[in-house]
Length: 295
Image (cartoon, rainbow, N blue to C red; front, side, top):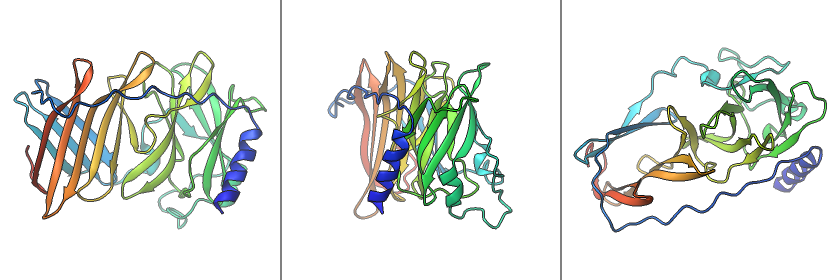
């Protein structure tokens, strides 16, 4: 089955031009020896399924990580997340009160292509994006720009073997790096760990999307007010990660890295690193009983 999926993805790729895959420079090594007291007060929110992990650092260097239940989305549709892309397919979107809601996406609809319209920059024209695949699995996105073009400008292939679900958004458009142009998150996997996306940045010089090599593999979100994005993942009730990446000099720089790992006897190891003086430095590291609210 996987071989067949790969063959179909290859055929889809060959039917349209594709953008150059850009590889970001490796992240500088992290220092694990130097402990640097923090003087900033930072609050970061990371949505992980029904919980929000709140990381707070006060002026004395005390860091608090608290899991909160998110109620703001309780009555909202899954596509209520702000996005520069809008569903524009001829097939009506399945709503929450429909019996098909939450079921595997209609395979024939994915094979035909599910259409979105996306605004690449404020006040600019829209592009047409069509999500394609087989067996309910999104495998590629065709990009038509301008939107009324008959031939695709490029084909974005996805690293995905998971089916999509009726009533849920297939992609989200948002400016992740603060350059004024829309970037693209295409959802590939959802589960207890959250919503994973493949990420494609828009390159205005070539007017094409390029595959991002840093952010995929986690729950990716734009950080409002800064040219930064967060990526988080929750592998169990005790194990989670949270990172912040900021765009600088044409690449992503890791600026914050929080890791929590469960160990034996109901204890967890917590590690926080931040970028200080041009490099990542250890801010706090300890082993405490699970559920400890403060460092």
